[in-house]
Length: 87
Image (tube, rainbow, N blue to C red):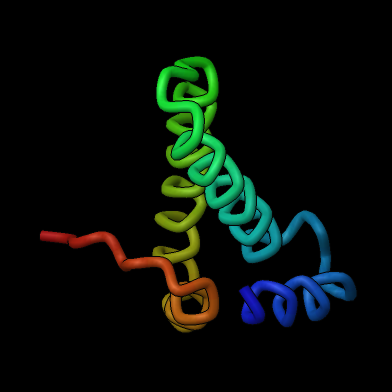
């Protein structure tokens, strides 16, 4: 969790519309929803919201991976997100 606070402090100066910032925000929402769903297993509306956010983040990461591979790798490492398998 310390890693997230460092990223959030550095992201305050960054453009909030940037792909990195959006992925960071989605990752925080995903982690928060995941911990909520561990307590409330039958909250199907939150499960749907989680799937929608996961899809949005996946599309943004795919876009970033195509446009700038270096920034993509750095973001994956910073947020400790597993890189999706291609092939």
